[in-house]
Length: 335
Ligand SMILES: [Zn+2]
Ligand SMILES: [Zn+2]
Figure 1 (tube, protein in one colour):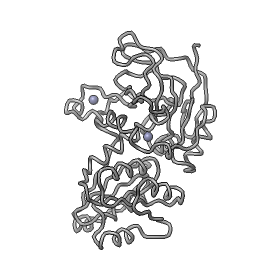
Figure 2 (cartoon, rainbow, N blue to C red):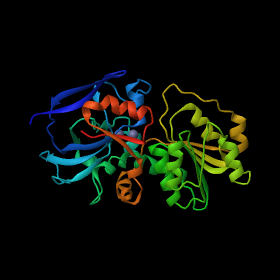
Figure 3 (cartoon, protein in one colour):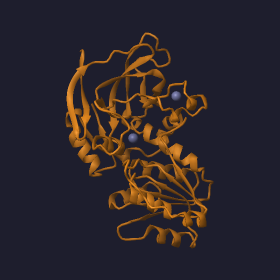
Figure 4 (cartoon, rainbow, N blue to C red):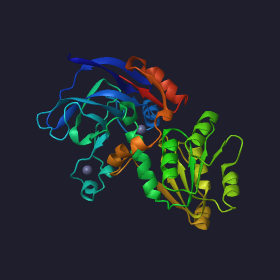
């Protein structure tokens, strides 16, 4: 076999299923047969042209897990047959940020993406072996989970504190599980979709809020004796939800923006309000060194309820439509 099927992104709303040559692993690369790749909000934004993270043409897909089926001549850390999740970017190692031990801020990262294809060759450093017995599909959530770990650790809540999460998609529901396990006294989730609110309750939320009919700030003030929550996480990637998250923390509280908003989204900030509340406003960009721990944590979390419909590669358009319409939580492409 010398060819494979993949979905190539050519530009705004132009995604084509094509046959391409099977990549050959070179140097320290490994060839991975993709078992599952999540469709992320970032993919939707890339394809509709609202964020400029990558340039087309390119095979997208950065939340992937699969099996190592061939090794480059210099690969030595990952055995043939290993079941792995892929950290989708490799820092350059030589820039200011890499040399400051902040490789995730590296502007010269080599993307190791391409999960919307049957196979991809990636540097072996990006392949993380999955725990025995973990379904490969669950491995596709290692990447979003690593982003959640990073966001939570930026805020570093203490046990007994209160946390609000705006949005119950994959990121929100993973953050919820991490917050629950970190000992939060209250975890509240704001989400307009009734099914997702129900899921949030099942996964451990103390209370859920329907922002369509209730004011999240009022609900959370009532739940915290008029004080406000200690931390609020924005897990949607939109202007309105960012503004909502910023309104929630108490005086001296912290907001963490996790969702990836369209590049032209804007919100109004009132400096007086930031001053009066002495608010800490943080943004969380992908991950630093959390990927290994995300993989180790996966068997401890409830992943199955987060998985929505599975689509084979030729149905990638349907997969994107399902992810865009927020049916299920995490839509998977299973090449
Ligand atoms: Zn993602
Ligand atoms: Zn670098």
